[in-house]
Image 1 (cartoon, rainbow, N blue to C red):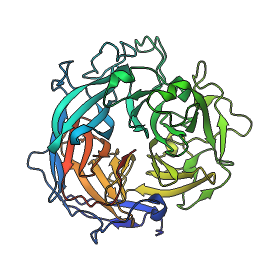
Image 2: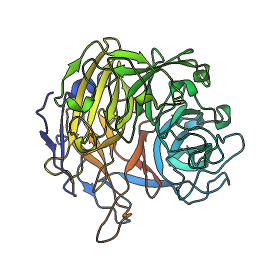
Image 3: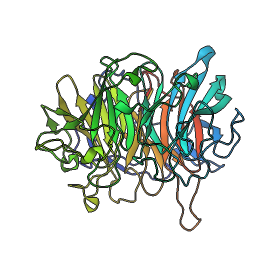
Length: 462
C-alpha cells in the first residue's frame, strides 16, 4: 500500500496513543509469511498494569526476568545498569539464551563486573550479560558474557548464532580513564562466552557503532553509526575475508566501506517515501581504526560521502538490509527535519529506497517519534522500540501499514509532577516465537511477554 505523508493510521489504546506513518509496507516484509490480523491491526487497547511496570493488551502477561542491582546467578556481582540491545538464541532441551547489552559509560550506576578471560579493558564499564531460560521462561542462569567494553548500545545476530555487540563511542586510551582504544565490535557466543572472549574485531572499524545486520547468503555485514555531532554518521558494509565462516571467523579481517548516494550528502533531505536511488556506491574507508581522524571526517574523495543523523536499528529482511534513522533536526545540523525513517538497501540492484516515515500525528510530544531497535514479529510486521519524549511504547507495525501499541512502560523515573519513563530497547522474540523479550533501559529491567501471538513468521532481531 502507499500512504500520504503523515497519514494517521492508528489512534488506539487506553492511553490515547497517536502515531503517524507513511510508506510502502509490502516491500518491508518481502519474503515473510502473511498472517491473519485484527481489523484494527493490533491486539486491542492496553490494559493499565496494577503493579505499575508494563501495560499490555488483554490476554498478555509479563514476567520480570532480571532487574539491575539484583545478584547475578553466577555470583560474579550485580546485574549491571542500562539494559539495551538484545537477541534470543535457541538452546538444548527447549532452552533459550539471551545476550543483553549494557550501555554503560564511566558514570554508570552498576558496571559490568570484570571477569578473567572475558574483560577487554579493566576500566571499561560496559559489556554484555547472558541469560539462560528454561521452559516457561524460568531463569536458570545469568552471567557476564563480556566485560571491559564501553557504551554497548545495540548490535545484531550472526547466521551462526552469535551476537555482535557494538560500542557506541570512539574514546581512545587515556580518555575517561580507559587503558585501551574503544569503538569496536566484539563477538559474543551466547552458549559459551569463553569461546569468543573479549577480542575487538578491528577490521570492522572504530567508530560510534550502533547496530549490524548480516546478509545470510553473502556474509556481508552492514553497520550503522550513531554519531552525536555533525558531521553525522555513515552507513557501512564490511566484506569479510571469511564470509559466513562461523564463530571467530570475523577476526580474519576484511574490507570496510561506506555508502555514497550520488548527489545526496545528507539522507534527511529526502522527505517522500518511495524515493529511490540507483547506482549506490561503496567507498573504501581510508583508515578503519581512525588512528588520527574519526572515520566520518576522513577524506572520501572529491565526491564526498553520505551522512545521516541518528542511524540506529539495522536488520535483514527478504533480500535487503533495512536501517533506521531515528530522527533528524535541522537545528542540530541536519539538512531537514523528520521523526524517524526506515531505509531499504537492495544489494543485488545497488538500490536505496526510503520506505517508512514515522512521526507524531499533531504534536512532537505525542508518542510515535524516534524509532530505535526493531525486530520482525511472529505474525508478520515489525515491533519497534520508541526512544522519544513522553510516554514510551513498543509499537507494532502490521504488513498492512497499521500502527498499534504493544506495550507501554509504567516505571516513573521522574517525579509525580514531572514524570519520565525509560526507553524500550532490545526487543526480540524467542526461537519458538511465543515470547517477546524486551528491555526497559532505566531502571534496567528485562521482561518476557507471553500471550496470543499470531504465528506465521520466523522471528529475528535487529
